[in-house]
Length: 243
Image (cartoon, rainbow, N blue to C red; front, side, top):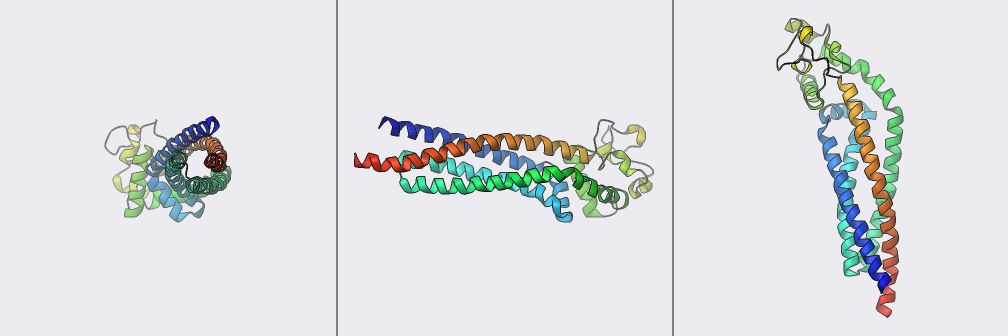
């Protein structure tokens, strides 16, 4: 009986950690949804490999939500000593464990080719700034939203606007996002601390990637522990009932 009580406490503890870990992943996913979403959504629709950026965001949201619900399910199954709930918990968390393993492989593969992908879209991105920015509403809106969200200027830096149609039509001015003040400026008023959106996006992905990896690895450990404890409880319930 003492062992059974200890297992219930462990089950409750592990699932509480899984619950809060799931909330953490959900929060990260929601932050990724906001951080540079205009740029990544546009790239995701225009350059097929970049759909993985969108997939990673929604995986965090989806997996985080499921983990939070599983944490509640596991705790409830242990408290109620319900074999059906414990078995359901084990099956779902095992399937989720396998999905996360596959997702981790996708992220690792993406990370290894990310630099190559950025090089391939370099000419396309700079081309839109020089030829379409200020001319086409959807392109202009996408870049304005991106530069505002990521606090960046241009794709590589402000020089992407040199010789652009926007600069020629504005009399040599750069967009307000590249300037020190809140108004469009010429080169003398450029904010030298502003990075290009490429570098800001890469920095954001690297920072969030480490955070996701750390949280995910920690949750995996407790998922395995919770699966083991849930199965022991599953069989121990019969022993208790026979006693």
